[in-house]
Image (cartoon, rainbow, N blue to C red; front, side):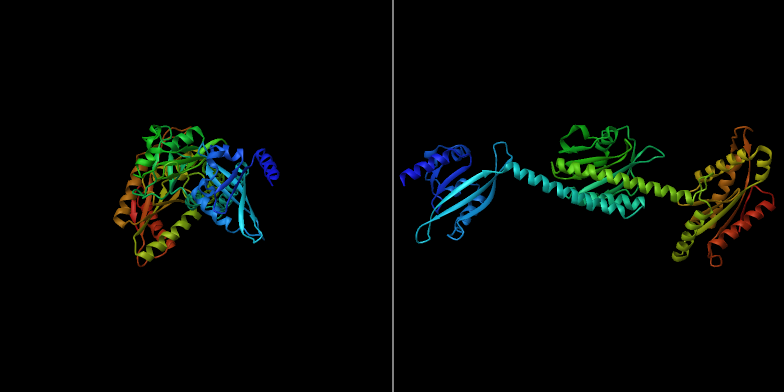
Length: 466
């Protein structure tokens, strides 16, 4: 027995695994050199100590429970533990317990062998994390395929991003307006919106983290926004009075140009990891493609209802929107007025100056109309040189005032032409309103049209009421 024990100790000492033997109550009877080095204690000091107490508390309790599960029919059991290493990173170990029993099947000793499985465990965790990222990315991007409506899509992008990265409690989505070059906050989630208007600011100014991500076309991971002096003047945060601590920003890149950015925020310090940032970057790429598709769809839809020369609604677009306004006005008892306008002697302009100059006149007139009506008003080119305007929530007196202002602006404007110098024109306008006897769009426009022709017949360059 002494020879066998000596040989056993010699063999065990040469092993790199952590090997120890203990009584059923955990009292150590033998440890190898690797075990001593692992705990940083000499052999003599370890003998007699309790194996269970040398493990992290939660692991020691579990190991003690496992020891009592050993029996002659099942003398081997395996379990994993983790404990922080010297650098603070976790060390993973796999332990095998081998129970030894006497002739009465009583457990008399336990041999424990521990193997370092940190590399394998980290690889498994990385694979699991990657699988989670792919799953989250799949679910998030799938939500973006459900609509081509841009405004709906922008809200869904934020919802999906926060669903994929749940540590983000708030988010904002920005797009660069293609007509002005301004950066616009187009969607917001998790903030109290004190101002319903879209917030705009110039890209080239300020220390905003979103501005920086867009200008540099690279993602940002900010662990503590409130202590980073680089971002103290950021308008996104101060305007919403929010306790943001950590941020990730993924620019929306299309053909090497930034068209906006996705920003996710948390009130916790260092809430986001590099893995979260990589997921946000991947998601932003898909979101960018979805946004571009929605924009193209919107452009196609807009072209279908827009007059190519004047950029006003064409007859189809005007009637589509006009029918909705009439239905709304009738349902809720709201005011709705219409203006019909025709350029006086427009045929003479074409005959005298040519059709190119006539087109310039139509473009200038449409621009004057756009500049002197509200955004909620609906402007359409009804046909030829005739324009129609619908004015929601406005009475006859106010509508007549609008018509008079339009007439005056047109008469006072010298319209430039490329070949013939300034051209002066006038216009005749007719005004009508929805009433108990005029309840549909066609009747409303016909009434305004009759008033307009009456204005022409009695001298032109005037406004008449239908």
